[in-house]
Amino acid sequence: MSNFFNNLRYKFARWMQGRYGADNFTRFLSFLLLGLVVVNLFVRSGILSLLAWAVIIYMYFRVFSKNISKRYAENQKYLALEAKVKNFFSGITDPAKRAKNREQRKNYHIYKCPQCKQKIRIPRGKGMIMVKCPKCGNEFKKKS
Image (cartoon, rainbow, N blue to C red; front, side, top):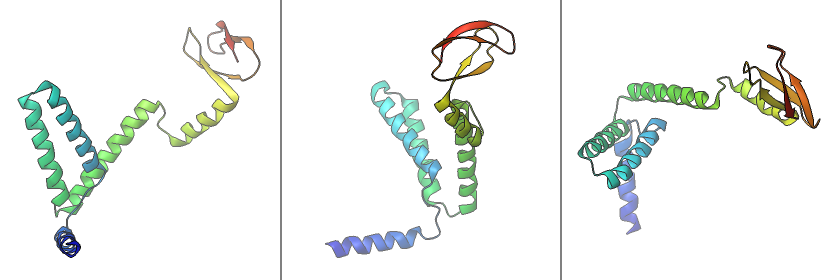
């Protein structure tokens, strides 16, 4: 029995040679498909069913495609878009700036001025202090 499965696995591997296979975009499409199916369980919409079928057909089309350069370009576009979305939600686009901010938060509190929204860095461990905004001159009380 295991010889049968080994033979089947070998034949599938030979058939997949020269085909694109799965990548990050395919993984995203599979999660999208899962989400559509779960939502469709509760909503029972024909449009969602059609959309789910379109996603699954496109996903398998990409996996079994022999046009590797085109699928690679699609994946690169997806990865660029994914990075933009992640950076948008993190608030900082540069990874070096993110690391610097993470390091600064160990030693400093970073507050925004309630009047002009200027970021102000205050050293930790000084108790309640009056903070004067260098931009607008507004004074406010904060814990450091």
